[in-house]
Length: 348
Image (cartoon, rainbow, N blue to C red; front, side, top):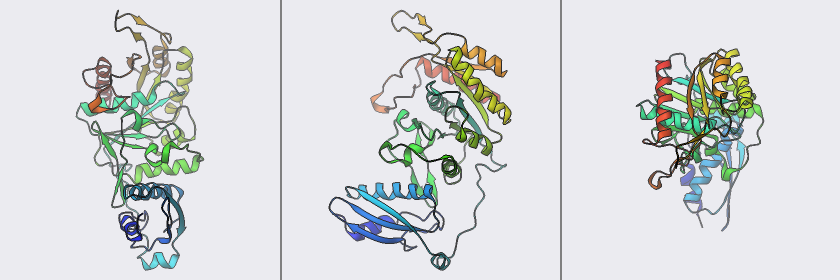
């Protein structure tokens, strides 16, 4: 059974997200109950913020469980104005370098008209391909409801907090942040649009991305609130539309492309995913989802078809478990390398 002193030691490593002081310095612990099967605590933060509370809860819970706690329950309270004043008040807000006009980071949004077309697969493998080209790459899994990037890349650890910033998890040369890192036990996200938009703000402002050449954003499918929110926050983002060869999928994807045009985002091109299935025995190609969808979509949007990616599961590698990644030497990885070359050429 953990002792109170061990809980205090954990709280010393966790910061109030607004005061930038640890939770012991802010006298945040309001209540603590330690039982054999549960540690329950109430913590006071300097501001009421559901997103920050969720981040704190995940961080504290993980650290207490690593220290031996079987289960952790957390409640939140708020510091009084007098307590905040005695702690020196709120520090001045610093300029967000990533979104500042001086930033050299280029944003690439990966979008689709509907789910199930492999948009996340394209996002992950394009990011890895750009990293293979020597580029400094970040990947933001902005598909809040359908986050899948950590699983696809075989990421098992979570981001760390250093100072007042979240440090992304790096895998295959790509810095990754996903909603999946901040949800316990794959629980469903039931937040409404405004709170989700706030979470995206935190992904930009509270994450230490460092110097990046490209930040790829795996957007939710369709043209809903989250996609619109990303478009408004990143007025100079470039965009890639993912579709399958089926004409209906291409027709639906055209809506996402039209939204990009209306919000003055530059279209980099179209990727046709699941373009065909190639038999490993005969080499014969079967167009199981039809043909021509990518060509029709690129013509409609007046942009380039960047590549056709066949339908095949990535080869498994025990030393680098990542069920959604095509590694160097794979013929499909070579296709993503060609797409990456086109993206670099267009943006340079």
